[in-house]
View 1 (spheres, chains in turn brown, orange):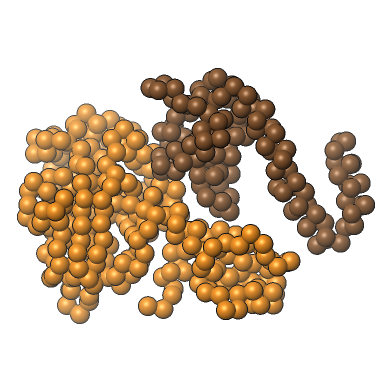
View 2: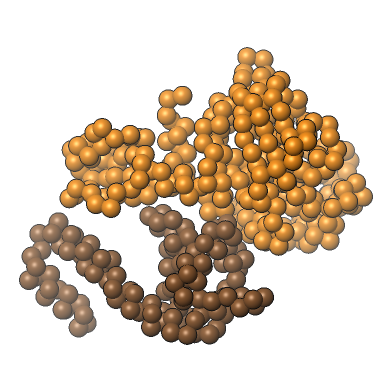
Length: 122
Length: 283
C-alpha cells in the first residue's frame, strides 16, 4: 500500500489518508505500533514536519495515540470509527463525481442505477 | 542559529547579482533556495560564508556580524562548486584532515557514508568523476557536524540512484540531529516534498519567502473547454494559461474554490509549475 501523491492535495493529507487506508485494511491492527515519523519521511522522502502533520491528523481524531518514548499506536475502535467516517463521506467522494461524469456522458439516472447494481453484484 | 541578511547587495561589473536582499534562515528547517541560473543563489551563500564580501548591507548570525568571525563561520558548512583541497590529496586523507581541523566533524560517519555511496577512499579528489566529486562533497558536508548546512546544487551530476540515497541520508541526518539546512537546486520536483520553507530569488531579488504549503495553497489551476475557462478567469489574477486545441488550462492566484461552473475542473499547483510560472511573470 502506497500513498498516492496525486498532487491534487497537500502531501500531509496524502500521508494521513495512506495511514487511514492501512488501518482500514488491517495492515496496522488496533493497539499495534505504526511506523515512526522518521520511517515515514524516509520511505517517501518527505520532510519529517510534513509526515508529522499527517500523522497528527489521526492523533487529533483519536485514531492514533502516543505512548511516551515508544511511538504511535492504533487506538482501540479506530477501524470502526474510520469505517463510519468513510461511509459518511462516500456520497461526497464517490457518488457526486460519479453522477457528474454520468451526466457528461449522457447516461441517465436509471441506466446509472442499473450499472451500479451490475457492478456491485460482480 | 539565526542567520540574517539585511539589505545585502553585490555587483559584479555590470551585473547586479544581489539587490537589497533581506532574508532570515532562522529555524531548524529545510529551506529551499530556488532560482534560475544566475539568479544570485550562489552569490548569497558565498556572502553568508564570507567567501565574497557584500558591497553593502549586513550579514549576521544571532546578531553578531559574520564576516571574518571564526566563531560564527565554524557553525556553517557550505557545500559549493569550488573545492579547496590540495590537488594531490586523496578522499580518505581529506576525511582524516577534516577530523583534525573541524572539532565537530564525525569521521566514523564520513566513512559510513562513503561506504554507502561506494566512494573510493584511495582516489585523488581531482581524479573523481563529476558524480563522485559531488558525492565526496556531500559526504564531507553531512559529516561536518555544523548546525547550519548550506548545500549549493548538492546533486550536480549524480545519477538517479545516488540522488535518491542522498535525499534519504539527508532526512536521516535531519531527523537524528535537527539543524538548519538550505538547499539550492534546480531539480525542484525532486525536493518539493523535502522543503518546508521556500525562498525564491529572481534577478538578485527575493520574490517569495514563505512556507511551501502556503505558496501552493495560494493558487490553483482550472481546466476545461477554452470558452468556459476564458469566461471563468475574466477579472481574476491569472498566473499563466496554456491551450491544447479547444481545451485550456489556466493557473490562477487565490484560494481554490469549492464549486466551479459545470464543465470546469480545478487542480492544485505543484511547486515546479508554480516556480516556472513565477519566473515567467514580467519583472
